[in-house]
Image (tube, rainbow, N blue to C red; front, side, top):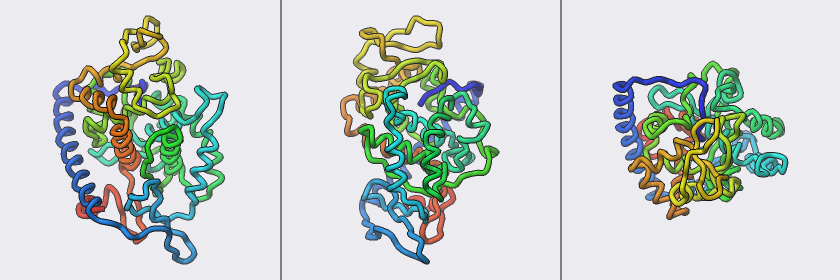
Amino acid sequence: MFSRPITRILINNVARRSFSNQSRYNNRQEYQWSRTRSNFARATTNGVAGIALSGGIAFILHASTAPSDNKLATPSKVDYDQVRKSIIDLLDDNNYDDGSYGPLFVRLGWHASGTYSHIDSTGGSNGGCMRFKPESQWGANKGLDLARERLESVYRAHPGLTYADLYTLAAVVAIEEMGGPKIKWRPGRNDHEDGKKSPADGRLPDAAQGAQHIRDIFYRMGFNDQEIVALVGAHSLGRCHLDRSGYEGPWTFSPTTFSNEFFRLLLEEKWQLRPWKGPQQYQDVKTKTLMMLPADMALVQDPDFRKYVLLYAKDGEKFHKDFAAAFEKLLELGVDFKTTDGSRQGKSASLWSRIFG
């Protein structure tokens, strides 16, 4: 999910250290908060399931894919099972890349969500601003117009569906269909009328940067080091394109299969700088067909990141579990979900409700 945005934010050393320290502190709070909520959820059961009817409108109480999910969802008339089927029908195409739009759908949902900042609660998937200028024209989002155009027929076929929900659900469905884990997902994102609420460019990861940049980007969203490494594991999917990021090639030999191969190859293969006129990237010594980005290599060069690379390379099941949790969190950043009782479940919810659901 790394890219090369057109503009870069220059941060002086003092501000960078201050930002990182504050981010680490916020990140530790978020992590403890998440553990408290998780422990409470495991200790309780929710007997509400299925649908409830009110005035002929169906309220989807469990819109996610996991039966153990007890989050309340937004009231909706949309049949999300049919939306899923419509997305699945669009995945395979022998005329595109490696025969699937799946990796591109994952990138779409990732980039639509990865603009969030917990510092000022701006950005994120809510609003579907990816489809408007200036966000649609960011260098980091080159090529994603193809994914949005591909999904347009799904949007038109399901009245009431929002682009913001569609882009995130498409990523979830693509991951699951490519062999990845089940990811909890619920509807409730709204669409904005224009791109005025898009944050400034520069919030998405820059592939040319190292460990400090990675932390600055992901800590701003509220992730810890383990979640960062898990999310970057999505590089088991897809490939880079010269006309988009400026880089070229796949990370793995099976770019349409979700696995822990990215981590295994990162550790076990020998990597060398690719001799070419493009930006700095690495190629495997053995076949010279795979590539790694400078930001990928930072994961094995930084000791705190490396220990999670080692963990996920050895334990694919653990990677799937941690990725599913981190990706669910990514897609929900900054979203206020209106629940069936009319309350708000999200960034503006009370401390009690945010901890105990």
